Image 1 (cartoon, rainbow, N blue to C red):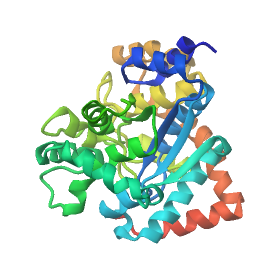
Image 2: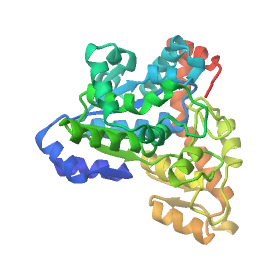
Image 3: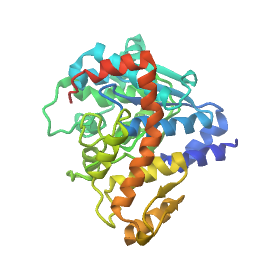
Length: 357
């Protein structure tokens, strides 16, 4: 596979690459550039983790990237996830690794790194202080969106450390690139700016789409806040489909999802078809009576969008097809946790934790 072919594969799923030219140069000089995907372990895995992000990790492994899975346990602690209980957070981290294994990711090819491991290194405090010195308090406050927070909330002093911590993590991990959701853009762009100031290697930033929650768009004060408020969240059961939901639960949630006729923008059901089902299955088959147009198969998102926008595809028919295919994708993962005793133990333990935000 040529460097350009590798870049093209990433372009197919990335919503933004900063910059494509730098990514191409990176693949030209490194056969296995180092990349990470990181998250705060807490709660039960929703589809944006178990299906969407797992799909992207597989693509990165396909092009030869050395992938680091970053379990941000200390970040979850200061962000009060699972009540700030570090032992519960670590159990949740092990559970999330098991979800990716069940989703078909070869974890022998993924380096698993805990935040608490790298933060215990003597070099980390020096790096953190150097990064923080290059940031203003105003900039750190604006970047709190990367932790799912806003300046309107009452926050602890530790939470203001979060942006500098995430930027420091990038360099401490020795990353050539990051692959994260667009909600993490401020941290990744901040890392590039800090790199220039301190003479460190500037990482390439790859950002993927943030999957909408079941309720659709929630208006914020600016586009970034709207994205944060609207994304599917594991801490909001009303917004999420989980990797353990039954066929009936999935159908019920999708039936109740925001999906107005002919509306594409802010429509989560359309998004699940576009970003999960079509890339994973290759088609979306809509089954309907002849008097309603008969069966139709979509292999192109453009065709699907056109038919929905013009009214040729009814919301209920779309919902029925999406619910069926989501269950097809979730079923093997759900069954893994039902049949594997260790996975089941982890899930049952994490399921019993009280989710806090």
